[in-house]
Length: 198
Image (cartoon, rainbow, N blue to C red; front, side):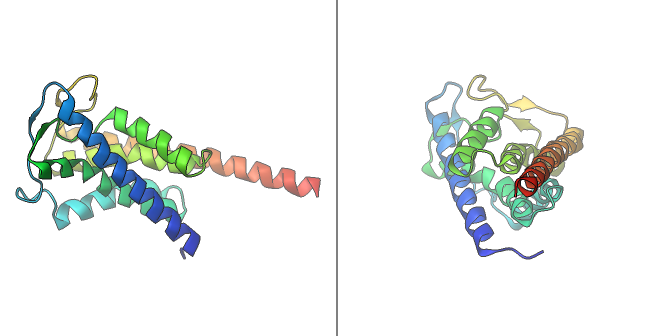
């Protein structure tokens, strides 16, 4: 597989917007009830090679089912960039930890990115929404099991059995696979219509 310049620009653009969304969304947690003192991710070793490689690999696996390099890369990159929500900890303020590890962020980021980058790019939508699932899956596999899944509507850390990491990963793969299959069929149908109209 070879990546074209246009795909590189697409991957970088999506990644920058997604990173900004995650960091920006975490700031909302500084005005919500149920705040706590946030941990500085650098001081507490939250940003390390193992975390980055693990999240990237989990996201990459879900992205592979698209069979398109740009989405495979995005699957891995976005699963890492969710942790931009930890950056608010650098401000030494109180807030809701891990704000982007939530259903609300998954939906919001999908809507924003699909509007900014071609609103009918369903593969992109699938990768964005499942990046939260693959990220949480790796966190659970690595030992974490509490996430503010329903924030900002319920600002409480929800405990999930660590062994459920595989369910999150399979669910992410299934979503990306189904959406990719549907998108491929639609593209094939359009080609047939265009060919027959010539």
